[in-house]
Length: 104
Image 1 (cartoon, one colour):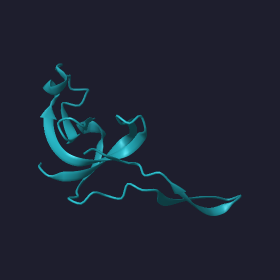
Image 2: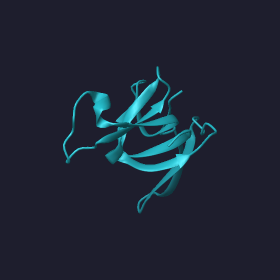
Image 3: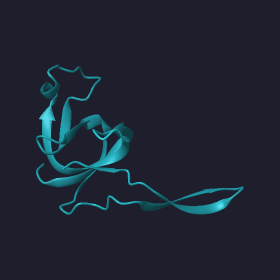
């Protein structure tokens, strides 16, 4: 697996900027569990993706990866439109920060 990917995770995570994200984008590299200096057991993830550059990256456990989409062009990292609905208020559109961490 080489190239730039948009990696969607099962859970929210904190990135180096202190914000929460649900996806990361950047150059990817696959590592075995030895990258953390420990040997995990069968109940834990035994591989990780490094997303980003050598000096600016996040490690995502293989068991937390939901989707991996090859994406050579940087995705939108500006505010995005979203929506919610409930029986009392109906459908409501609003702008929110992106949930994609750009690891470059």
